[in-house]
Length: 69
Image (cartoon, rainbow, N blue to C red; front, top):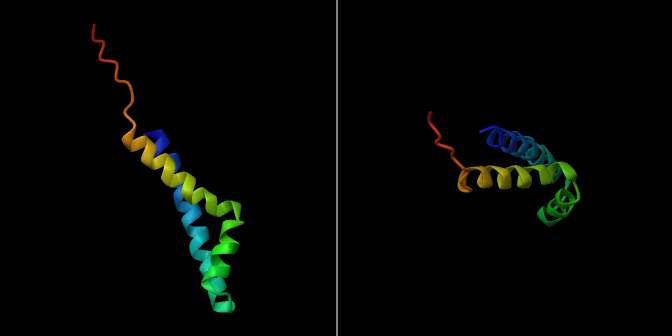
């Protein structure tokens, strides 16, 4: 559960950065220029890393120890 929250936090911070950088489109940049700019920013890789961590924490099963005394 902790890993899921870490992934969620990273995805939110990266997604907010992507949304903030959308303001560059109003300054005259084209969408391809925007994508090239975003691909060079480290903050935006947090979005992809967060989505990956969320996916892995949901779909990879963990060991369950059912040892009852």
